[in-house]
Length: 154
Image (cartoon, rainbow, N blue to C red):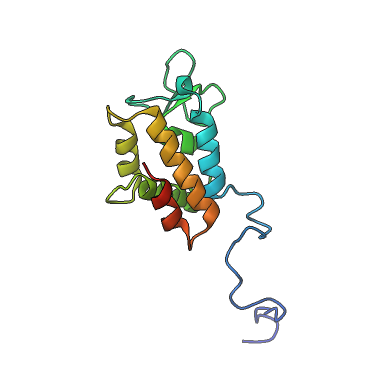
């Protein structure tokens, strides 16, 4: 390979860049799991905006199905409130993991969290308590997340 076609290697950059963190230039523009959970909590704080036992993630003021992140969305279920935060897939996955742990679910996946939240006996207070526990765990960071969620779980 001639020097004209050889790729340029920058020696001033680290070989293994540090993972994205709170001070990362990229992470300033992407919602974290904590931000997603706080956004979902804000949407669901008013019981009138909580959509429970419904087949859709979000509905408008007239009860018609709409996209969770649409401006006309007026009510959300738990998963719809997470979708409306428009997070990245890794951050949303982390939010779901924290919610599943806070709800003491045996498996960590979207379906388990959605089914738990839509159970007929589920109350608005339980949804908020699990969101609060997950928010606390997200704020605690990855090391203490499990202990914080276990302390606050319903």
